[in-house]
Length: 101
Image (cartoon, rainbow, N blue to C red; front, side):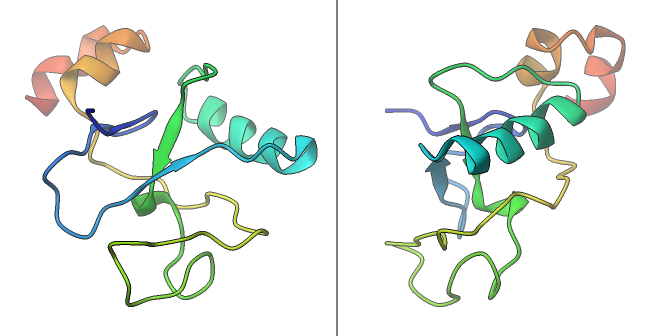
């Protein structure tokens, strides 16, 4: 299964990057959705976010990368510059695809 972040795109084979489902709690999920949409991307039922959007030591414990678990209060807050060209195309950012390839 390919690990895909809603913002960064494919994050397979990237060291120290984990992938996380959106929370089921309505108020927390709304915060995650707002964060993604504020970056200009769409959220689907299958959307996931990678650990690059969370603060180490605050949103998750630092150390165990193989089983990194977010805290129940974790809200994405870090904007990543690691967008892949397919993610940009799918979100409508076609004018900047050449800058990111």
